[in-house]
Length: 187
Image 1 (spheres, rainbow, N blue to C red):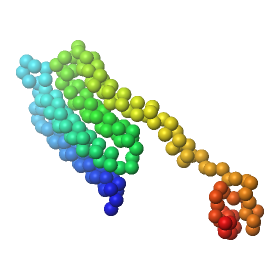
Image 2 (image 1 turned 90 degrees about the vertical axis):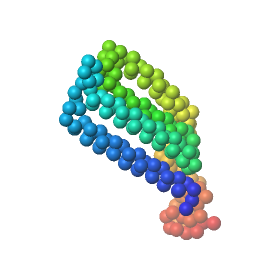
Image 3 (image 1 turned 60 degrees about the horizontal axis):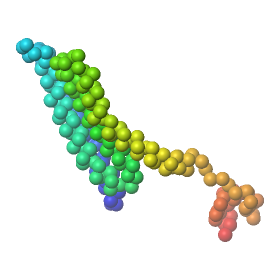
Image 4 (image 1 turned 135 degrees about the horizontal axis):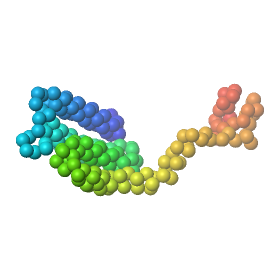
């Protein structure tokens, strides 16, 4: 087995592990939120047990996502995937962790400090600026490479009309060894 193929299998294995972990955590969350009395507030504090469950599981999900990011980044670097793409993937993983934090803690922050929820959103946005900037700059720096790659796949090479098959007279492709029309050997 080649090193590139082993790395792809490691990436797939990591993605499956991530999916299973999130499924288990979501199942635990669903069970906990179905418990009787979970929506009751703590006395004299505008916090419910639901908010606490969401926050604790959010921390666990963020930890899993960050661990996944740290584990998959070296594996991605060992593949034939260009380094700008691996950087984009790693930064998207970190953005996913920030998004998980945002949705996990939003109810708690909104319950405790409803007048300052804008500040919470601003702080999380400021944290997300760095990975967003890295992804944007990676795309900007590699726009010529991406354009060349896409154009190579979309534009077929032209057939040279100056060379013709000596047997059937059909136009030949550049450096053709056989005629695409009659199959005759050219050179």
